[in-house]
Length: 146
Image (cartoon, rainbow, N blue to C red; front, side):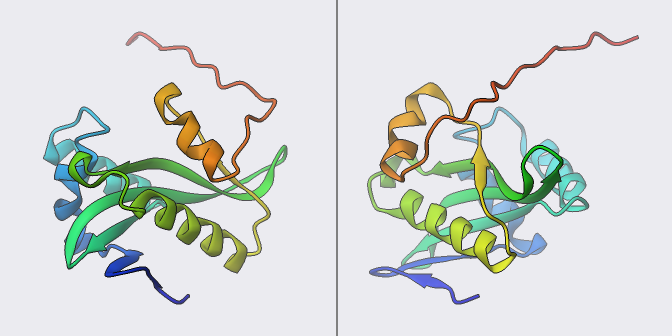
């Protein structure tokens, strides 16, 4: 797949050797220390999870975690687990460019949809990218240790 370039903005997959570079940005979204972040990313990578970086003038300013999913209800689709742009560079177009990258990646895999869970304060951003609420609400139950 061709890389996305937009006025010195480069969107590309991160190699596992680069994952530690993503931590300062992902830490703005997730409350994890670096060791736990790397451990979880490695574990998730066994199921297809990948980290994508947005670079502006060679500096990592955004990170997206995504994975292919196949379910009976939705068929083959791409799920975006994490999307964050460094607070100092929000509004730079990096978030939009990463979403475009994910959509192109899903199409290249013959997937027909991209799903994600959005924080309430991020909903307007996703709506501007033409994402809409879907009918299946997300629910959870936290299990106590046995």
